[in-house]
Length: 273
Image 1 (spheres, helix red, strand yellow):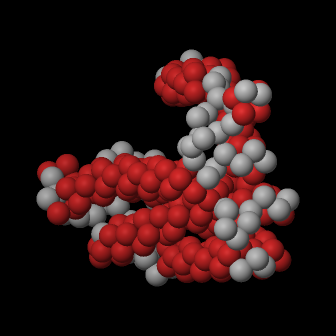
Image 2 (cartoon, helix red, strand yellow):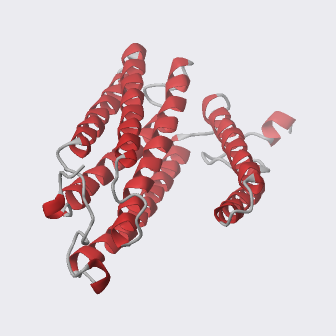
Image 3 (tube, helix red, strand yellow):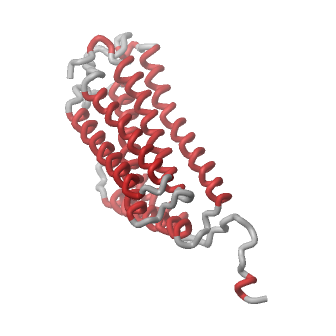
């Protein structure tokens, strides 16, 4: 039997070659976590910087290998893609539960005000945002971005490369605009440097969502350059699908944030900013 036949794949699955990135990523993430804790205690940023650099390097190299496997080596068969879809769905489900924790904390404090909040919600002295000012503007931005990424996906499935790039570019611009508006909003938060349950739950929920918007924007930027290089085909583009799923997840979470925290939880002090 020749070497070619000896190594011929006789199944539709992908047996991944040994990779250094899981252990390297674990070490880098650990350094990042401990570095952040040390930095918060005023001990210097060096471990944080090294951990962040290692994590980013691992992400780049690992995903480069995945792109190579999918685009140039043909390992991502329909069976493999199905498994990746299940994996992405489970990942998004875990992200949903992550945000459920912050909503749980917020509703516990809002529906059952404690003595520390003065028995009311929002707590005494907290001036909340007008939900139909910047928050509503950001809602329109994200909803529009959901339509543009769907347009890009439709164009990709139809083989329209130019439309795909245009839709992705518009989605990226809208994602950056959302982040800029939220940064401006944060800079005008009157409760930003006060202690208490309201700023804690507000910033944890909206801040982590903002981080997810930034991550999703980077995801889409990578997809833009991959589409520009011709990596995606109408019948083979799971990387783009995963990015689109993630972006729609970000959209839906924001709708809950807008309705529950900005609108329902605003109270009579809304519009003070």
